[in-house]
Image (cartoon, rainbow, N blue to C red):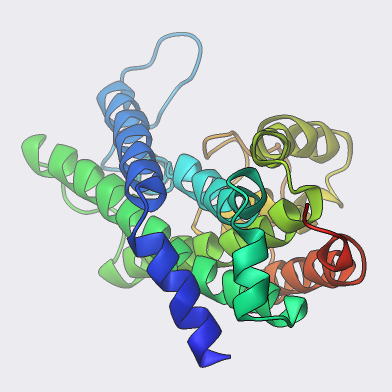
Length: 261
């Protein structure tokens, strides 16, 4: 199993996919955090952001890393589905005939890289937010422990969403289809379901990951539904892990056993 995980990590290191998506996540998170910080305390119509010397205002900036979460899931889906697009799945299964083990190795490797998405995303949003606080001469409205917990939530959430993406990518197999599925779910379906039912919203994967990273109702990017009651940190981690296991199990008994040609 360790050999299979090392092989998957080697594939990640020798392609431009991870650095490219990581740079995109950092850029989008930085852009959102900068715009949010610049608008903080400005009033006006539309998207209002409280001042950065308030708990609500600073939290909105520090937890604006939703693009990093979603792109971590895109990374996982692309890693898995890319084997079929580039027709390397046959070689992979010849090296390791146990397809369930290959699926598990991909999930573990993607989760490990996904942690980096969360770390980079949290570093960017935190850096931007604290820079604006310092420039404006404000006192820090949140304790360091809370800021660290937001970052830890982003790291854990990104890692588990990447593992979920692997299961989805292996299930769909088509790289474009898997990527679109992740984006449609995060930006569309979750928004619809969360808006229709407040009781369901906390259990939706992206929403749960965003809340564990510190976002609250009406915050995050994509924006979380209003009236949301976030789950505890441990419950979110268990939920996301359960979703990853469920999708991977379905994949293991269906598409993972099909012909790869």
